[in-house]
Length: 238
Length: 251
Image (cartoon, rainbow over all chains, first blue to last red):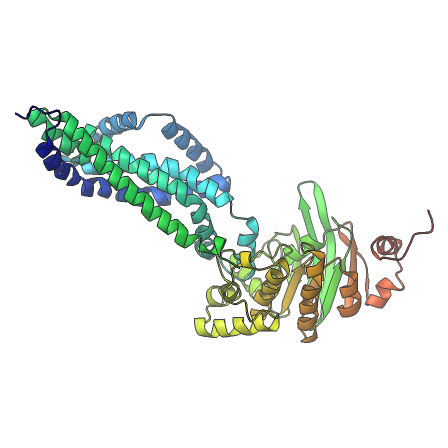
């Protein structure tokens, strides 16, 4: 066995093992965002327009998610959903074992549930930065509300939202590491499993560390590029 | 061409409009004067459904709508017949001058892009901004922004353009260019309903002047009727306050 502090060949090999978990981490991130963005946006609109009942539900939902650790949300949903499904399956005589469900599905639900709450506040603050006059001007030239939002308001709000959206996305990527708690074969779990064989935990953790770091830096840069593109109208030179 | 009857509007307990009637003939420039809080802006906003009136009707000749209960379709129809020039310009910040003007044509009126851009360029040329097509609002002065705002209204070729204090937010030295632009489009026979504090514009350009105070029309007539031979005491008092060089000797 290697006597040096770090097993370099293992470090390198495991780096690629950890890297092979990236697609799953990204898949969970993207799918969760795809679910969370419309929900977050819709709830943000109900908050801004003070729609009764839904507004209150949205408020409670946001406080609830913000006030509890993700890992606990994972444990709660991971135990609660199978129980609920079991009940439903039994009632309708569906022959399917809830314990055969791919943890990926749980990850989608849990992380979408969590991220949507974050995005409600991101979108709410961003939409409120767009002057009411923009909507009125759009209406006055004959646009419907939906057209006004799509073409005038959302593009402007998005510029404000992007830095926070980037933070939310990066947080989500990092949070997928908690997927190991529900046996999701992503970056963390893959590297840890590899480390189990020879107890090379330090190397595995370093690999995990580096993979997340690279992933998050790349995502950050993409967002920066996107923000620059979208905010051209703001900083155009006279 | 546009007949507005019995418009009422309250914000909470504050009654802003207390039954306003108004008739505008095609090609007329009608100026609404009045102290702040008299309901001028609210009246304009009710006509374009930026505000829902509590009561009242608008008759555009071939389209008669209830200002309170109009359906979404009716609201869109009215907005196709009207255009609005805002006090704060309200140009779309994320669009260039040309895109600002074309937006309503392409999206609102479903006009082919090429045709829309052609009309938009002509409208910008008319307001003297043929060298600013691709400029974003942040790159334009207040006066230029408001001229884009006017071009945006003109391009829609509406039955009537509603101007809500179009020069009030401008630096004094930029007021002239906007008034000049408005005079120009007035000369072309555009029907205009203008809320303004520019007495000179009212005197020179208006066919009729309406004086509003406290949510009602106090007096209306030709510029000569209102400025030279006003009948109502409230009108006289207002004019003494706003017209330079005229003092109230009854102190």
